[in-house]
Image (tube, rainbow, N blue to C red):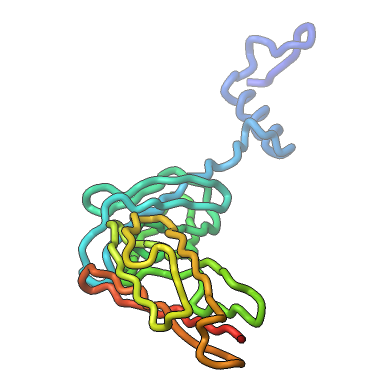
Length: 224
């Protein structure tokens, strides 16, 4: 049956399904957006488990942060699991931190609609950290200071030993260093007590009283 126009509209003999198909084909040929919608971009997933490098045990309470096309932060649960869902695909930097452990950083690529899995190990700290291991007083300085950082998850008691009479340190015998804090020490030298002209050398030993934590030495030099 032929179609015809009446006052600019299709007459009753026009087949409507055929007309719709014709119009859709014409719009499609012109690239109409509502005929051809953009494909949906699915978000990706970053997930994994964090464990202790020495014991293999899962770690709870690890702070996990991501930076990249998006930024975010989460904390591992009782099973050491972390998870970021529905994030924009792309390259991400993932940082893992927990008191008592060395930070770990990894790079991962997230793909649309796919999970990115990974097991991360964190290495525990086993010693205190001094801000300086050598104090040089030169020919004129009489006082200097240093700090000791406790990166462990518990307090550490230390004893302090000086091997020369011309060196004094405050505190002089012991200290308790709280977890995650820097403890200040002040050192002074008395040149009148130095045994010789020229360079004099001595040391301060910091000895933790807690088992399995190593001691360290601060070297002292001064000129009389």
